[in-house]
Length: 582
Image (cartoon, rainbow, N blue to C red; front, side):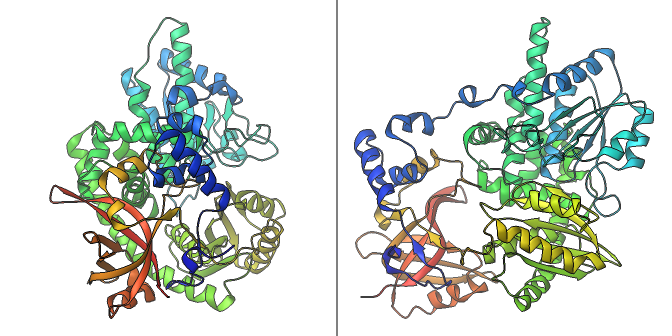
C-alpha cells in the first residue's frame, strides 16, 4: 500500500497510512445516502458502519444496547444476596481495588445503599503493604464485623482470602481473567470467568456492578418496590470504563456517552470537586476522563492513601470533597515527578536490551510500584510491543504490564503464574499485574516473551500513523468538530479521527512550557488554523517546526475545541508532521 501523502517516514519516524479503497468506497456510499459531511462519513466507514445503521450509530440508545444482566452467571444470586442484606439490616463491607475502576465500583454501591438510608464499610488495600486484591488478614477482620462482603474489581482468584472470611458471605463482582476453579463465594459475577462465553468480556468492573444494580432493581420491582434512578449513576461507570481502557464499542460506548451527559450536570459532589481542582472549565469529554480525572483519582492508590479516590467519588459532603480533591491534585503532581524518573531509567534499560523483541521490559531497585503501570504504558506506546515494568524492594518485585491490540497479556501472565515462574499474577487482555523474586526475573521474562511471540507480538513494526483522510483548514469548523463528536466517544478500540492537512505553510510557531509547541498554519486561501503539539520537543518534531524557515509541511492530528477565557475556537492537536515535497 502506498503511504498516505507519500509520507514514508515522518518527523517522528512513522509511515502514514490512509483509508484503504474499501473504506473510501464505503465513505462514498455513506455520504451519498445520508448527506453526512465527508469527514464524518470517512470515520463511520472506518468503523464499519453501513448507511442504514448510521443514524442509530450516531444516536445510540442505552436501552437498545444494555444486555440482560442475567446473561452473566451468578448475577441473580448476587443481586438477591445484596437485597437480602439490605432488607435484613445486615452489616455490609465493600472490598475494592485501589484504582479508578475499583473506586468507581465501590462508589456505585455506596450511592445505591445511601438511597435506602444504609451505609457500608469501605476497605481498599494498600498497594505497597497489601498488594492487589483480597488478603487473608483483611478478609478475616472484615468477616468478624460484617455479614456480607462485596469484592469489587477483584476477588476472582482469591480462594484463600475468601475462605478466610469465615462467618460472612462473600459476593465477587469482577472482570479480571478467571482461573479453572472459582473461590467458595455465594456468587462470582465475572464476564471473564472460564465458563462464560466472553460476549461481555469487554466490560469493566464498574459496568458489572451497574448491571448487578439493574438486576437488583428488577427484583425490587417484582416485589412491588422501587430503587434509585440508576441512570444518574452512569457518570461513575463512564469514568471507570475510560480510565480502565475498556474498548469504547457496543454497550460501553453507550454507557460512556450517557455517563458524560450525567457528568455535565455536575451533580456528583466528588466529581465536581475533582473537576474544579483540575481547573476543568468545560463539560468533560472521554479524553478528560482518561487523562485528567482518572490519573487524579488513581493518585491516592498509587502513592498516597489507598482509599482516597473511592472516598472522593462516594462522598456527598462538599467540604470533604474539596479537601480530598486538593490532596489528590498534590499527589498527582508528586506522581508525575516519580513517574518521570522511573520512565527515564526504564527506557534506557529497555533500549539497551532492544526494543524489537516480542516483549519490552525493565526492572529496577526502588521503582515505586504505583507508577510502574504508567511507565509500562509509555513503553508500549513507544514500541508498539507489550511492555512490563517491575520495581524491586529487596528480593521482592512487583510489576505491571500493558499490551497491544491482538495480544492477550492477561492469559500469558496467568499461564506464567500457573507454571511457577511468578509468585502471583493476573489481569485481562490489555493489562496485568505480577509479583516475583529476583531469581524468577530472567526466566520469567524469557518465558513471557516466548508466549507473547506465539501471539504475534514480535511481528509488528513501529506503530504507523493512521489518518482518516485529508482536510483543508477552511473545512475545520466548529460544526464539523461537533458532528465528529457524534461518532464518539473515542478511546480504546475507537481511536479519535485523525486528519492530515497537506502542503501547509507555518504562519506562527512558539515554544510553550518545557516541551510543547503552539503554532498556526494555512493553505494561503483561508484564515490560519491554530494547533498545539504536546511533548513536541521530546523529539525532533518541535524544533523542526519551530525552525521551519518557510518550508511547507504535511500536518496530521485531531481536531477539538479549545476553550479559553470563555471563548471557543477550533484547534488541531498535532500528532505528527512531514516535509512536503514536490
